[in-house]
Each structure stands twice: as C-alpha cells, then as structure tokens.
Length: 194
Image (tube, rainbow, N blue to C red; front, top):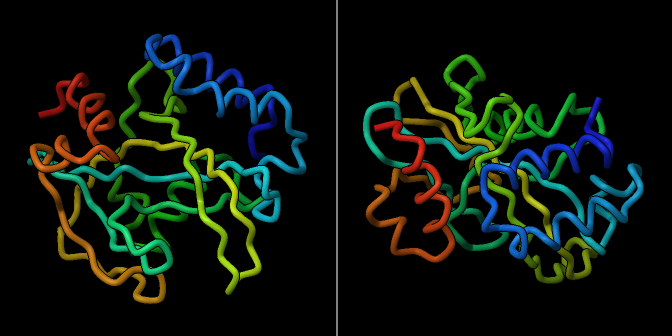
C-alpha cells in the first residue's frame, strides 16, 4: 500500500538525518505531507500539489545519468511521473515510470540507497509545474521523491515516443554545471560508487 503521511514524514526524517543542511530546502515537501490528507497526497487533480516519483538511473561503469527529453515540458529530465493509487509504494511508482518511459525492466536496475533503509531516496525535490490548458491542469507543485538506480543493461534503450523525444547518457561533469542536477550529482558523488 502507498505510504500515508506518517510513512512519508518518516521517510523525510530519515532523509534529513543524512542531509541535515537541507531542512530549509525541504520545508515545502514536509509542510505539504504534514498538512495533506492521504486521499490528496497522490491525486494529480490536487492543484495544491501532489507526490511524484522519479528514477535517477546511472550507468553501471561510468559516471553518467540517463536523461529523457520530455515532450510536455520540453526539457531534459530523469524518468518519472505521477504516482498511481494502485502502486505498492512510491519506490514501485518510480520503477513503473522508469519501465513505461524507457522499457528498462526492474531486473536491470539495482537500487542504491544513501542510508540504512532501502527506501531512502537520493533526493526530494519540490518544483513548480506551470498550468497546462490542453489538459485542464492549473499550475501546481510536484513533490518528487527520487530513487537512485544503477543500470546493468545495454545503453541502447527503447524510449516511449509518446512521452519523450529522445534520450541521452550525460556525464556527471556536464551535469554538475547544470543547476537542475548539480546537487543531485554531488549527492551521488558522496556515495563513492565509481
């Protein structure tokens, strides 16, 4: 069953114990979870915001991250999206989204947790989503729970062309110069994976 507010606050507290300097950065996430009923946490029609899930997929042997050029936002981003109430957890939502967008199977992904629990995300990120009149969606926030995976398969992947225009593997050196990914790359670097 999907995490309720108590489980999400527990996840947040474990995350903050590893990233104590992010209390201010994560205040929007914490406040949203603490003041939102379970029925609205993942509801994509909740235009206060909702929880989303992402898969940060890194190459097995080289410091590179998989990015997709998302059609709807016209940006290079990691695989991810909305959590469904049928998902078992936020983690399973991240895996489902990764599979839907990249055709990468669960068996090809190794979860890397920055903490003692396998359910600790590598990052939490609350970000603004502009209104989308074509989908009758008002502006809102995505409170994204991002899990880190090492990919063990062939780097030629079959993306979902209805959601993304293209994909590429981007080196950490390049990503560290991009404000969207710099902090994330720094966190991955602290894990001494490569």
